[in-house]
Image (cartoon, chains in turn brown, green):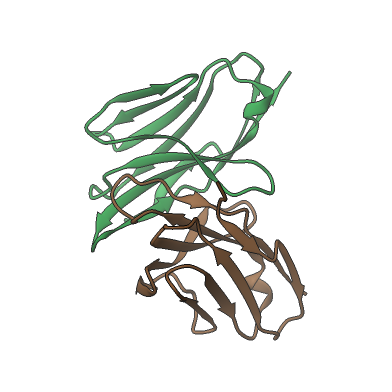
Length: 115
Length: 114
């Protein structure tokens, strides 16, 4: 079946512009996570959705970052007034319920480059 | 306290050899320890996982060894193959507030040479 889909796969934009990154989770997965992966670094947690609500936004690095999820499915991560330090791969993952021991299924990410 | 420390950062192993990646943690609330494998340009994928009440788990050529008292765990890849060349992330999870939160190590880039 279809896995987690992210778009665009690559995004190059100028400093100060806004960007929107999209994630289509596996159908039926209620838990959705966003991570950021910088070059040579591990995965940094950004935000977690259960259905359309976000009970954990603790990883969002600044108020320039926001995310929403609609219909318990598609999620968008928005970065306003992008800075060069925002350059990274943004990964989305989903799992059936976000419960104990459930693996997270990752998309292939959006590689964001800020010029 | 939420960190998971992973070593080495990179590893080169001959084909047929054993690859060993180590991780350590401080937070005793972690209750599940998965390993993820990531190929270039792809997202991480779950490889193998262990619960803290088990000292070892083996799946094919991949084995996790877990030392609860030392708060350390490691991944062993037996008979390493060039196709195993990838970045490996250890992780530790907590389950609270109704959801699982995953803390990842910084990754180990493994290269298996023929």
